[in-house]
Length: 237
Ligand SMILES: [Zn+2]
Image 1 (spheres, rainbow, N blue to C red):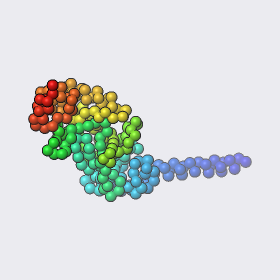
Image 2 (cartoon, protein in one colour; image 1 turned 180 degrees about the vertical axis):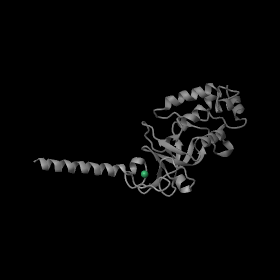
Image 3 (cartoon, rainbow, N blue to C red; image 1 turned 135 degrees about the horizontal axis):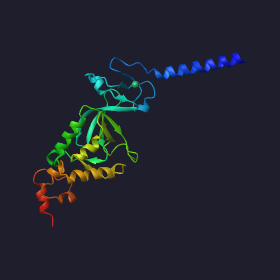
């Protein structure tokens, strides 16, 4: 009896050891700390065989730059380019596939059509560039969010840059580069507060685009460049 239980115990122990060793040894990575995803890919937001990197090795290689990076259990995507003050493009999936991301819960002045570019749209685009260009970013959904994408097919996400403690969405509202978007999200009230603060301090567009007529903010949030503010003002009252 004793021998049987010893053998059984040994079997259990070796089985446990084997499982531990198997799960503790990750699939091999190359010299850049990267490899193709073989299993549990969905958990990390990757597709099977998607090339991705772990850790913080920085290598100037196009292939490495576009590969997603995993820190902990979160997958960061590389920014391909900044489109305007609240939209950017990221590398997603295999073979350098790209996808547009619309920053959730905020709204920056429109850059297009060019001849009707809204006041502070260029500065907003520039600011998003400063924050996110070429960076690895974390894309997060909102708990209350019902739509994954907007009507233009852009992913609706909160964006955080690796190494930054605040979100890009918040930074843009904080600096007066964007306003809170009236959306059904957990952060809508918080973003409204940030917007009110920036407005009160006259930051960004709040100082630049509404200098003369403070009441404009109530009727028209993004006046057009040039004389449109005044012309609009003339039609009031
Ligand atoms: Zn991996």
